[in-house]
Image (cartoon, rainbow, N blue to C red; front, side, top):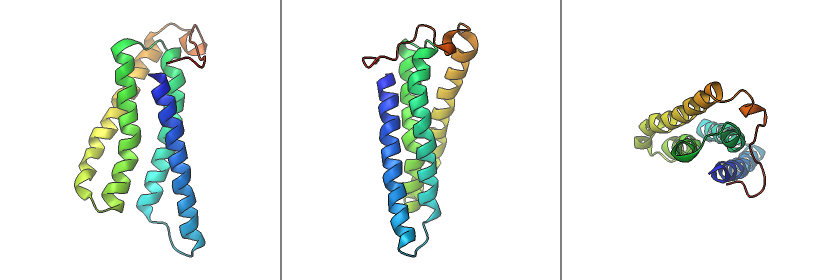
Length: 139
């Protein structure tokens, strides 16, 4: 499951960079970048970096089983849902999607609260490297 977090993070950064280049083209053409495009770009960038960090933090903190699956699924859904609704809702006029922001934001919050729990209740050395494996075969 950590592979999904890391992969989603790197894919998100690639998408964010492509959007950034598109914004550069807009500005170079003498136009103004729409605020909704900037907002989605910023959210995807920050959440994608955090997805990569989560890909290393989940095994380091010993999150396993169904909880590991929940943390991964909730985070990835929120990572793409938040910028997605900004781009689709505001940018493409699909404003009926905007209330789903509470769903995607809630998914991110629950994922972070689970990680908070593991970070404060796990062994003291868990965050310091412990027995976590970061080998290429890490799932």
